[in-house]
Length: 432
Image (tube, rainbow, N blue to C red; front, side, top):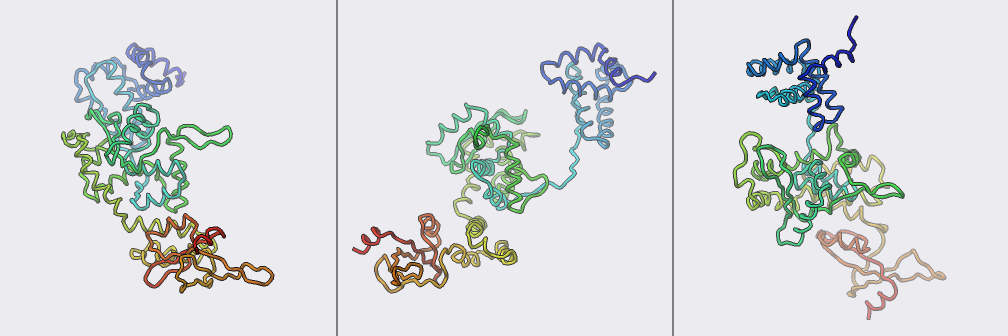
């Protein structure tokens, strides 16, 4: 009679060496993981007695190590998952029985798709499509080099949150975030994040009636990131918040930040094989290198300025009234290398909220100019509307728009005419 899989597993568990191992790891592994380990160890050993395998491993560890590597390589070609589980099961079994043999068969991860790439500017495009608190969180991840696991460590650690809060009022432009080392070769792991991109931890999901208010976790981050990337038309398979770590590393490389520093801030790198030199784990040295990255932000690169202009244009009511073919024509300008000047010329058109032919008084010397409009009548008599009119540069435009000013037109010298209607009291006080 053929032995069933359950009977075979029960027989394998009856071996003294397997039974002691299975019961001995009960406190360190979940039940489901223990079951998987036993199954894959049984498949690997086949008909060989576990005691014989242990004897061979102690007597000739080199030969057994080569054998394991060869067999795992063959298994890998059939199933990556099976190869990894077999490797972990063997290492657990050998370690429990104190066999001085390390399973060094590195099973390479077979990449079934191209690793997604995300530039610094495209990361900004995606982040701009998200809402708070995710927008601030993703900016923090981009500038600190941390991934979802590190964010969750901060989210669940009151002591780390307290340390971050205590540094907000110091004179340094950054905050040092101490985390648990990710590598055995390191005794310390920290990163430095610019204060302007620091967020308030812990971050929670938005509340709606009796739902929400839970800690933001990697699942939430991934869902929000996917929607934002699709909205920005940058989605590709494998893209996620974790990609921001690669973006951080690439940007550091472009700006001349020492590779060891960027790798250290991400929790991996040179420490894997050689360990880090003493200065690499020194806060002052790390800060001096990362300033090469931070200084680039204060100069407002042209690409970031183009993204800001594109966002303002697409948020205007005028944009939504354009036919699709006209929108496509305008979008071509956004992606031109030298499209900045054209975008600046477009901005007043998209931000205007009044008809183009509405007259603007140019000759009146007073700050509050009276402009006749054809929108208000009283018994057939035109009423005068009083506006506060200003001529400003581009750097002054956005704050005034937030204060209720409208763009009227752009002058030949590049300056912009804006105005805001005044109520009766403001108009009288302004003319006195």
